[in-house]
Length: 226
Image 1 (cartoon, one colour):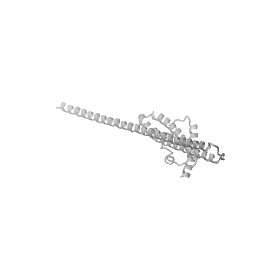
Image 2 (tube, helix red, strand yellow):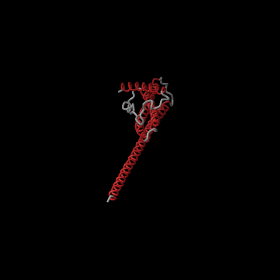
Image 3 (cartoon, rainbow, N blue to C red):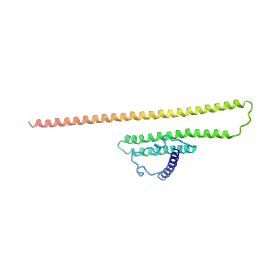
Image 4 (tube, rainbow, N blue to C red):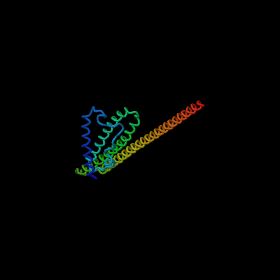
């Protein structure tokens, strides 16, 4: 698993640097010239290897965070480009919704990767600080030093607990936001389905009226012959 993640991190880092260079060269190139199709977005390149990764070192976690941040930048460029392309289509909202449904999933995966990497970075750095402190020569015990050390340990423990609580609260907030967005998308899809159903019913009724009028006209013409 570690080898897989390490290789993946390197490949993603290289891909990010190549993409950035290409983007700089194509700063004024339109999405049409890049061959983009309005509303069509590729799935997340981070899925599945980076949905729930395991980091063995601080370097792996930091590289993963950089990959997630680069993905968010790509998503922003894709959103801007597809909004530009979809504005030229007849069904603008449908086009944007197709692109956004994929971009939302890509954003969620990238944010999850960044959050997990951040959490692991804090853990790795905390371990490093403790290891460095343990290597330092201990000072001769003085009066009151035991009490002071106990207080220091208690404060450190309290800070760690607070940090864990903050991370849990932040993740819960993001989860609630994801659920809210999913609910809004569901409601939008339901409204769209109702609009389409009303449109279909209206069209069926219109055709029915036209057919009735046509039959009535034909019957009137027949009656006029006798």
